Length: 274
Image (tube, rainbow, N blue to C red; front, side):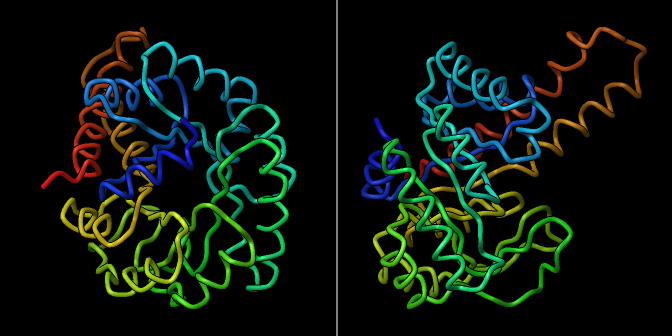
């Protein structure tokens, strides 16, 4: 099933789709074991940094073969693509979905670049995600203003034909000093203004109840990255500080198992059963 169709199916059920970033074999194994255990679909995401680290063919083929191996329904997505060229490379190799993030550009430039990627993706039958508003990235001011305006969201989607839209309603990338208060009323207004699939970036550190409320009001895709990196590295640090084991095949599974438990919990939330 195409990702676009899966989104519509889940949105009609008031359920979400978890999109998890991965960085190596161990983090990929962790998220897929969780999805397999819960019998739920999953989006696997790669950023430019991860693509540069692993190599595009290696990263794509690893994700594809592992989805098949574990029998998980899933899609491969470019997260925060920063150029038309990178989106084109990912589509050409077989990505199901790409994000073009021109959210820091003026509104008209965001529309122009997003439209260009949407036109390209049509020939591949691929999903395209864009971002509108200010969602602080790592190292940026999390108190910055710039929430998504419902009327601008409507305008943007109609002008670009984009399938999915990441909206700014109070989240940020990375960890929070305190849990943010999501502007759920604004989310409801955006959902009424456009039929695009709505995406919540910065899912790490948001309470389960807040995520469920966001899904009820229109969010269909929830991104998870920081918590995956953090739990993997913190578990490794603790494990290595208490033994002298040098066989990574014995050390890494402990950290992978922590990812499994983390993602299983998130998957229960996005299932959003009452």
